[in-house]
Amino acid sequence: MALRVKALESLLVEKGLVDPAALDAIIETYEVKVGPRNGARVVAKAWTDPAYRARLLEDATAAIAELGLGGRQGEHMVAVENTPAVHNLVVCTLCSCYPWSVLGLPPTWYKSSPYRSRAVIDPRGVLAEFGLELGKEVEIRVWDSTAEVRYLVIPERPAGTEGLSEDQLASLVSRDSMIGTARL
Amino acid sequence: MNGVHDMGGMEGLGPLDIEPDEPVFHAPWEARVLALTLAVGAWGRWNIDASRHARERIPGPDYLAMTYYEKWLAGLTRLIEESGLVAGDEVRAPRLTAADVPAALARGGPASRDVAGPGRFEVGDKVRARNLNPPGHTRLPRYARGHVGLIERDHGVHVLPDSNAHFLGEAPERLYGVRFTAAELWGEGAAGRDSVHLDLWDSYLDPA
Image 1 (cartoon, each protein chain N blue to C red):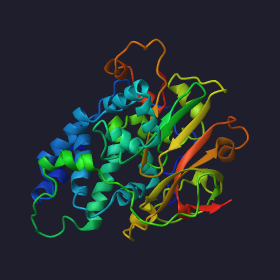
Image 2 (cartoon, each protein chain N blue to C red; image 1 turned 60 degrees about the vertical axis):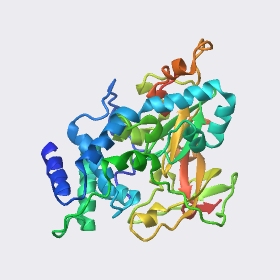
Image 3 (tube, helix red, strand yellow; image 1 turned 90 degrees about the horizontal axis):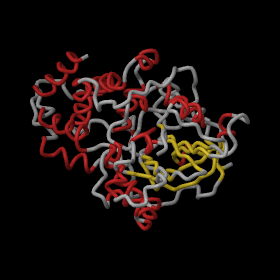
Image 4 (tube, chains in turn cyan, orange; image 1 turned 135 degrees about the horizontal axis):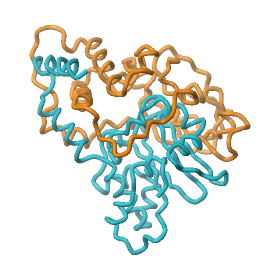
């Protein structure tokens, strides 16, 4: 596989179609700059600033842009909020659409056939494989990303975190809690 | 097309393989495939819908056996061939330089279009997903076809993938967030208030 990719890259560079330095810059962006820490900042701000939370639920794309975040695979954002009574779970059954701008590139399991196939028909079974057992009283809403709209789950703020700063709160927010396969 | 990529609602595809502390890429070639796909895409010879359709056209048994970046490589190779981008002896100047990358990624490619005119539906309307089985690209999953849901959100007017993937124009249409109850999709055994939400274009829907 590595050889095939190298051959393709060499051909494209030779034809002047791609700049190897641009490839490096793209890779660095997703390895270093764009990842779930971005989404965690959004969540922490929503937890601490009720006006921001309201704007996020009303127009997530604009509210996320307030933090300087957005762009590729985050052009049209919707935030969905977990409560004690409602749990949200995000999937893309048709491919692997994912909110890159706030969560980075998706983990392998998110892109895998078992997750893509079962999340819509058996969300409780899928969550159980992540070690999350939800009672029947909790309503599960599954968001299948069939268009260019991307979904960010706002997890519930853990109890006992009243005194923490926004940065400290952000460090508690896991990637999986923003996909909906974990609670905090 | 009714391909294996449209896998929502299938069972028996195995247990989840959850890797703790997973790296962003598992091998350097995966990173190069991602970057090549974005960088060559900057030539504008195809669009995101055509990219998805190129991956969907991987033969089903291969699709299920391949990793994500193997599918991306197969899709990219196909798009390059079909577009004729590397044909001939011409040597060009890259469309995307390293200096362009931050702005290009920050800009992205919005699918919304500023087109006047309402769609046929409003929030609160009951709709039935049409029983469409097009041979080409669509974003209406099989598991929703024929089922009744409720319009929950109006996303505005978006490019229609069914047309755009085949270079037949953007054909923008109003896009709606539609809520289907789990019981409607999967039968009475499904948990009471659970639901599945899909984003569906105007032409995917009939009034119900």
